[in-house]
Image 1 (cartoon, helix red, strand yellow):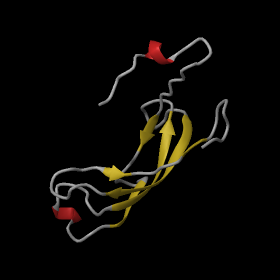
Image 2 (image 1 turned 90 degrees about the horizontal axis):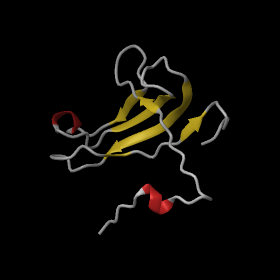
Image 3 (image 1 turned 60 degrees about the vertical axis):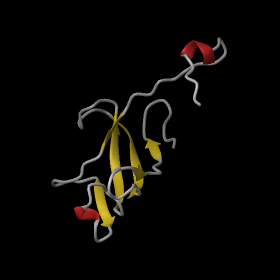
Length: 108
């Protein structure tokens, strides 16, 4: 059983909440893709999910929704299609994000 807490229940005068707003841009095709398929099983293309597909990525992170917005970092890593091959389309995606500018400088 899960309990949903309201912000007022977890914030005190000594603790602050920071809300981060950023946009991750993953481009799958075209002249400059940022996500590439490096391996897949023989059935990946005929299944409704991405089961068995392994991808690597180098995605831009910006302060706004447009690609020309200020770059604040990059997400680099990979994804693996691990769902039920006939129903779901979920992925395992451990991805570090490197912040490249602003007040914090280079942090992961």
